[in-house]
Image (cartoon, rainbow, N blue to C red; front, side):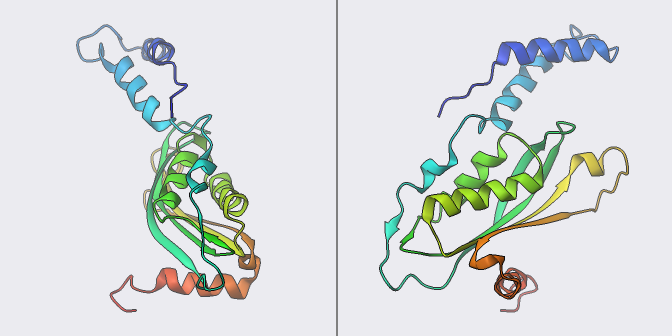
Length: 195
């Protein structure tokens, strides 16, 4: 996957930003900053223009005995909030009830990572992950729970450093509250060392 990030334009914009806040972009301390930011943005926004569904193309048929649930929890999550271009970090928990096919477990973090690597809001990110899995695997149900701390909440404005935002996106069988509760129980189990 190639990046559509224009490093030269980012570096020029960062130089302008540094000047706009009264700093000298040519000072020894800041001279390399524009390209450091460009390198960071290349990584942060690598998902722009990328199709996360490509990671689901190797799904394999499993027949009648697909199991009741596939759950991968604690997927590391990092994205950049589109409102202030500040990071939000946390974890994603992704579960699906297989239909006729399952996908390798590494595909789930790759879908999360691709969709997170673009300017985002947490609410939309969860919906996009759920929809990608719904469209790509045709499962009986999908549920995505995201837990994240936001730089725009912790570092500016209200400055709530311990606040965590939780969002839920679901499709199919997991739109039912009873079905959701079973997944939530699994997400809570094991956190204190108990099954």
